[in-house]
Image (tube, rainbow, N blue to C red; front, side):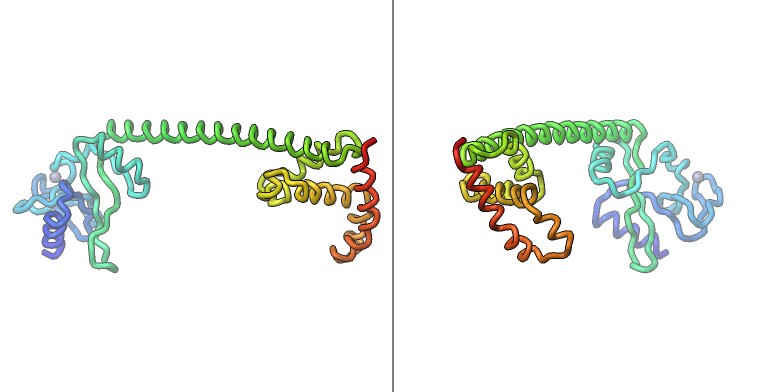
Length: 235
Ligand SMILES: [Zn+2]
């Protein structure tokens, strides 16, 4: 019998212990004599051939499908009795693992551990997000202070607006670049220029009207320079 031979090979090769097969042919239990149909879950017991799970004393186990590695590992650990469930793949000509039969208590314990893990990870993520916010908040303060220092004549409050915009998370804007992180004057200056362009000139209107960015920038350059000079002057 092909399936029995293959099962024997598999058992000795992988030493997987108890195995349950999802049968692909009509089988009858060698113990209770019941006809199990063609898709029965059976074990193979040497001379006696196929056994139903009840006769094999495995019918109290729960099926855990493959896929969740952590859950599978833990369920195996917490279950005294474990059986690997295999199905013959006609296409690939080999047995393929479908999952495990494990004890209900073991599975419960494994699920609890995975849940706890999940909660721990969620809490850690929360903590990290909070820390990031603090770091960013501090960075915005420093950036604003630098704007205040370099542009003492700016309208009060603009430094905050500029700093926040420049530091916008994940935006890839000036504020996130390495040189701005160091709060270099050129980087801070670039952020201020961008702000002035958008808030003190017709730049945005020109873009809406269909100007190329380069054209629009050239068109407002003079105004930007004038505003910068004013802002740089001490009042
Ligand atoms: Zn039986």
